[in-house]
Image (tube, rainbow, N blue to C red):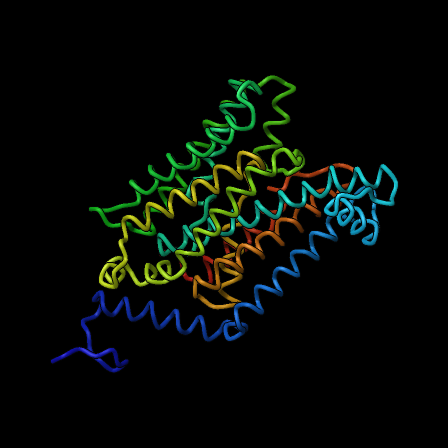
Length: 374
């Protein structure tokens, strides 16, 4: 008898076709519950981009010294047009040389970490995957702290970024190797391996901190908890190029990420080279994580929260999830950075305090909602 896809067709309990059908029906149900799943993607992208611009403008204006929105806009518009702004020197310096690079870096970090989370969750078909949970952040942090403690500033920012990238990609290779059983990726094993390897790398990072000089220890500790305080125009160029190119490449893989969600066997049957696709996207996620952690330190839970909120609101299609996660991830981290420098002004708090305060309860809610990580 020829099997059909009708809901009434009989299959043995626990069979793979039944599990595949269960995943697909659950995906359709999730799309049906998303309140904005039917909204056209161009409208959503335009609205998200407008929100990002508004949040960035407010963040540039607010701080220990408040600058009006009108003056903020005048400074930015004048510099973009190559003119001298008709505001005071102090306001010009605050807006153009201090706050604008910082806000742009926060937006780039939020964008990159959110896209990295989307990629990793799709690759392992596990909602709990993100650069922090899978240990990529810990690997990048260990590499960067090793350079900061051992080599100091001798290698410069390029050296820190390079070592952080290789730390992330080596960690990803180890975690993915440990997460397989007989050549097949097992999501629960992958998450557990990521947590275990992450803690091991965190211990090594803590040991290196003991070797830092007293003056360098505070900077290292603040950096490991995440900060964009060191942003400057000279550092934005390479980061912007990496993030924008990586996001553009990820967008091209949106359809294949949808197919990977049906399982390796089904994806292969539909013509997707699963191994090559996974390798490219894994390198992409590691590149994003390594570069962003090298310039902003350890920022957790962005790649976990934002993709889920996007899926819950706009549906499961990765052709929608990727661009919206990029834009809303930027909004989120810009808002978090604003909190970090205004909650206890004039003191500044690390970004990781706020992302953990928001992300950990979300993680627990996600565990309860999904009934576990499997």
